[in-house]
Length: 114
Image 1 (cartoon, one colour):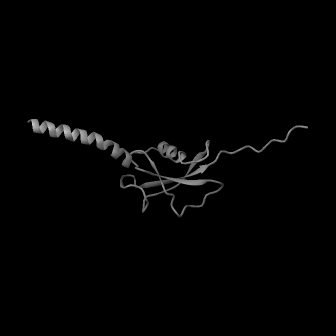
Image 2 (spheres, rainbow, N blue to C red):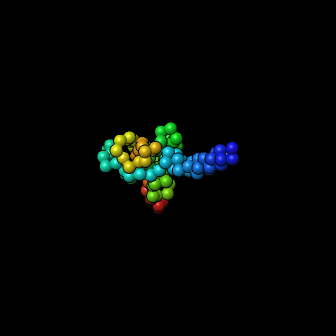
Image 3 (tube, rainbow, N blue to C red):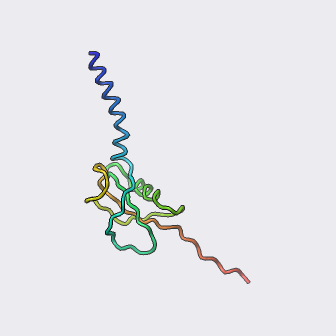
C-alpha cells in the first residue's frame, strides 16, 4: 500500500513538472523562421513568423507574438499567410503564421506659417 502511494506521488510530481514542457511545446506561439516564398505584399513591411497549435492559440495571441518580433516601437502587424508543411516548428505546434511588421507612420513635417 505504501509503495502504491509513493508511485502515485511520484507520478503527480512528474506530471506537474511536465506541464511546463508541454506548454512550451504546444502552448503559446513562438517565433520561427520566415518561409522563403511569400505571397506578394504591398508597401513597406518586414515579415515575421510564429509557430502555433491551432487548438491552443487564439488569433490575438498570434498577433501579440508576431508584434513582439517587430523592432520598431508602435508597430502594427498584418496577417499575410500560414502554412503547415515542412517548417522548423515543433511537432505539437506545426502550423506557421506569417505577419508583416508595419512601422508606425510618421506624419510629414508641416510647413511653418509665414
